[in-house]
Image (cartoon, rainbow, N blue to C red; front, side, top):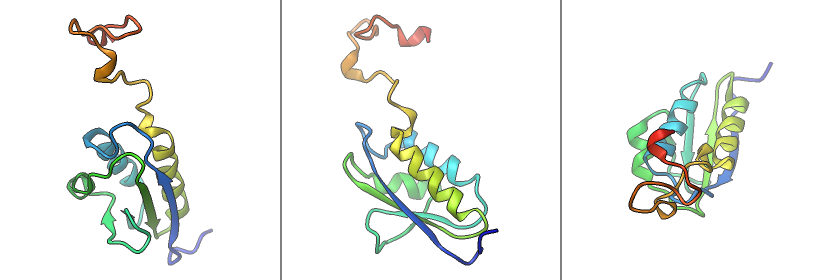
Length: 119
């Protein structure tokens, strides 16, 4: 069993096109809330640190693509929390299949022929 007083840390590079905007912020917050204990993130390893469980605090950061997000957590699930958050960022918040506005023509059909309104 892990020591709940130990702080675990990790970092991941924002690779999704728009950085930490609304949808990724919500995904990050929802994931952080799954873990017991304190979960925080920062743009610099020395802080300032922000509560990763607060949607308002996460969205205020407005980190751009190419920014490194630093995570730290404590509590009984600290290692799992940091690993999960780093993995989420590494996966570009699972948004790689989301068509961008650059892929769509005025009719709303994407460059690969899909109509996002039809799923």
